[in-house]
Length: 213
Length: 133
Image 1 (cartoon, rainbow over the protein chains, first blue to last red):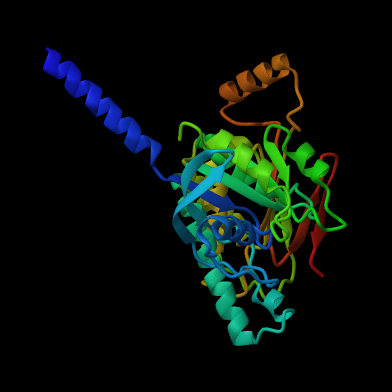
Image 2 (cartoon, rainbow over the protein chains, first blue to last red):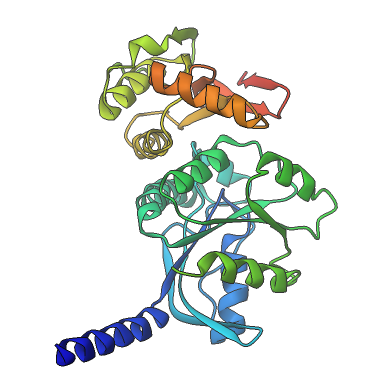
């Protein structure tokens, strides 16, 4: 009997230790060109010294899911370890001709469009595997976009905690209030991933949402 | 499923699909029915809305078709529903109606091929459909 109690005690202690060091799968979702990779890069650079992927002004720069494992984020004496998952932007349409405006050749534009469609399918498949998701929106764009609503609706249906980042608040047209009123039930944090603005508030909320994951 | 040449639009129609038409279909059949109508160069208005997982599946399935159907560039999609600022009693009533009817009948879903529908602009008070020239 006593041996059994001891066994259970050590088993529980070991499980708790293991649980504490578990990697939390943190996904970055959102429409194309909202700044998902810029934000993921900013975090990865701060805590690992390395970036997760390339950024570009041309939409759909991220066309496959990118990872950075064991990113230990330290904030106010606490630390949590994340597996960062940067996903391609989700859209309902892709037209290779849109890429021609960015001076890409026709062949390159067609290839980019093809890869972008595959990236969207991959992003959607990954939705099931996330522990916490940061939905990155461009604060200078209209938030009432069905893609945003659909992504968030899916995360809620799957009971995955959601943090909305209103990115690009450094832009003149940025309007965080519009995003807050579009998604009143969620934490919305105004940020500039480019300039590292408001990261403290971001980490605070991220830690709060990731607790118990 | 008719696969018209999406590069050359000669016309389109607007179709309304009552919820009763898709109520008894499973997710796969619902999406197949919707895509069948949209791929026929139609703007589709559905009474009610799809489940969140059906919406993402619709996006995924549609995007996967882009490279396989000549001229097809995807869809424009919008759901018009209440703004969610209801009292507890209103929310309870809505949930009761949803569970009895099997869907959110107060919503309208608009889906159109991107070659016809350039953009669906929406804000809490209005929705605007912009068509391609």
